[in-house]
Each structure stands twice: as C-alpha cells, then as structure tokens.
Amino acid sequence: MPSNNDLRLVDLDDDGVDRAFRSDVLQGLSEDQKAIPARWLYDDAGSGLFEDITQVEEYYPTRAETEILRAQGSAFAEAIGPGRAVVEFGSGSSVKTPLLLTAIDPAAYVPLDISGDFLRAAAADLSAKFLGLPVHPVEADFMRRVELPDAIASMPNLGFFPGSTIGNMVPRTATDLLRTMRETLGEGSKLLIGMDLVKEPTVLEAAYDDAKGVTAEFNLNLARRINRELAGSIPVDQLRHEARWNDDFARIEMHLVAQSALSFEVAGQTFVMAHGETIHTENSHKFTRRSSSTLLLAGGWTPVARWLDSGEQFSLILAEASIPRSAP
Image (cartoon, rainbow, N blue to C red):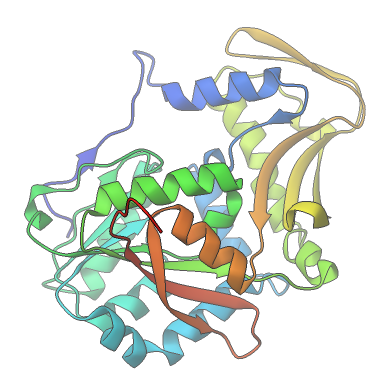
C-alpha cells in the first residue's frame, strides 16, 4: 500500500475549489483566442478517458512507447543503473510504469499528480504489483517545484515523464517545466522523457479525433468539469471537438468549437462566444531529433541516449541534469 507519507500540495479555497484552476479558466476565457491549459483536462474523469484513448486504434503513441519499454529494458538498466527513486510526473500508467520499474530495480517510486483520486488508485495498483517497493504518492501541481518526501532525500532520482506530455506545452512553458523538474529532482538526477515525432498530418489528426469519439468526450469533459467545479453554465451540447494540424508550429491543436452564438457564466463572470469561435484546449507538439535536443538543453538537461520504436514514430530520451556553465 502507499506510504503514510502521502502529501497533498494542491491549493484549495474555502469552497474546495482549486484556485489555480479557477484562475486559469477565467483568464483563458477572457482572451481573444480563448484557451485553457491542457493540464486541466486531467481530472479523475478526464484521466480515465485518456486511459481509454490509449486503447483506440488510431492512437499510436502508447503502443509505440510501450514497445520501446518492452524491447529496451536491459538498455535502460545499463544507462540508468539501480537504486534510484523513480519520480513520475503524472500518475503511473498501468502498463508503462511497471515495465520501467521492472527493468531498473528502483529504490522507491514517487508519483506526482494533481488528480488525487486517480493518483492514489495508481499508487495502490503499483504497490500491489511491486511488494516491498516504497511508494510515496504526492498530490501536487508538478508545474511548480515540488518538495519530495523526506524518505527519498538521500537517493539519486530518475524523473519519468512518458507519453509526450511535454508536447502539450508551448516551448516557453515546456522549457520552464523542464527547469522546474530539474529543481525538483536535484543535482545528479536523470530524466527519461517521451517525445512524439513529426509524421504525416493525416496520421496525426486521426490519432486526436478517433472514429469512436473517445477523444471528443475527453475534450468536452473539460467543459463539464468547469460547469461542475466553477458553477459554470457552458452549453456543452453546443460545442464540437476539433483536432487540426498546425504545420508552422509542428503541433496538433485541439479546440472546442461553438456551434452557435453562446453566452454562459463561470464563477460569476459572463462570457460570450460567436458561432465558430473556439476554446483552444490542447497542443501536442511533435519533434525531430534536433528540436527535442534543443528543448532539453534549454531546460537544463543534456540528452545522453535515445530510443525509437520499430516504426520510428516515437522516441524515449534519457537526459542528465546539466552542470551550470558560465560560458560555452
């Protein structure tokens, strides 16, 4: 079972509302291009829907990344070494995380996630699979520096950030997150991170707009969450999910498109949308070898190894915390 040292670091107001969620939503809906950070897609319902997305035929990243983890276990063990505390940014996948833990013989496992119930369920599942492995779930917004449990203070850390979640962020935010991860993990740490690769737009658009409509439900769930948690009145049935490839920025964009002129309230404020106007809810940037290395270096990490799946669709990159330098 998870450790008694479980931590909760989410900032709630007196009504139990996440202050950061409310602030991001109100600010985002006030902008000319309405936009809400993708991390808010992952409440308990959203996290569950994303697990469903990973199983649809069109969504290749999970299969490709899992293939790498299955095939390269010995390479991971050699490059990472035993005895590290694995700090996963996001609740552990029921498939990918066990593959990594089995390969590298870790000293502890610390999942960080803002979705508390999903976090604790994932931690309990991992505890049952790895008897004797200390598990310390931390409910926190990992976009900010996180104080790790005292129990792992003396251990070297391995950050694990699978799924190309880093691609959800614009380069500035992604760089800030990588720097924050370095602060959280400390000197001498390593980071194993997933990055999806540039490929044909038709493949990418299908992956984010599957025929069964699971991704559409995932996107629309954000509007339902706003209604539920922020006293919203968004007419969800008047919104349509759309995924589009933006070649200039090498990214898939997810939008909620107004099917008619709308007026609604959120947290006591009124917002309007014209017919065809959108709320931009997610980016999924795709990378080349060069762009992935540039991003990691800007965030304070030096790439040391890189693995691809057999179809060369996805990459897992191992990086080391860079030593600060005052000159080239």
